[in-house]
Length: 375
Image (cartoon, helix red, strand yellow):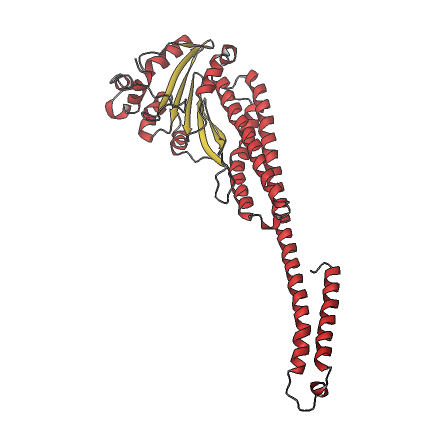
């Protein structure tokens, strides 16, 4: 019996009338698990729905409503419902079932939110920006280095609803890791929230390590022998991608700190110690990004200085050659004047003397420019 097939019908509860009736209308369509990126993304927005009691996975009911009722009667378990890019219609029934605030629902459906943490009564709403490093063989002025997505998490006393946007940030492996640690799952929905936060922040550190390799390549190219010929577009592209990474990492600092220090009803005090570790990792990632930004600024300034030096060297060479050409031009220009009384015009040694003067003057200038590094 397909749990996801039942969940698809929950989204139409207001039009059909009643969660239970709608959830049981059809169960024939196979579940599509988007938590594993290798599987087909075709199907409903529902990724998976799992119930847990005392840290162990338990069989789900015939539909979402029955599963939730069973967990609430057991008192101590919770339901983890995963969605991928749901529409407003698809999410409507789920929002009513778990009594989710309309403002939080709107944010979860529309996406494009900044990282934040909000409380609506007994429900906690958290937004995480996910990041992944885009592999590329060569950095260009248009290379995509960092790709971002979002994970919204609704946490209540007996439920966790995750809404994922983007084609990365899969939570399937994370779910399996948690199920392999029942002791952590006994701490309830807060354990899932911590695992998601830890997973997202660990990805930040992995991406910053990969970005550092790109920065090292650019730095090597700039300070190479022909560094003045390096493409500044690569540096600007890295700065743009770093800005996108910064928008994901830096704003998350305050929400993680709140989870680690402020008393929150749905967060087990034991879990707050784990959030302090996540906060430390987030701060490290933010500091690395700030350092990268400063380093790229220094690399860009160094490149511009190299370009300026190269242009000055070119101007000195041009000036030196212009001076060398000016000597014969001046001498020839003098003797090219059509005056009648010019003694040297009729002198037997006039031409050899003029050529000798030109040669000596040019050689003297050439030696002087060469000695001073102008040529």
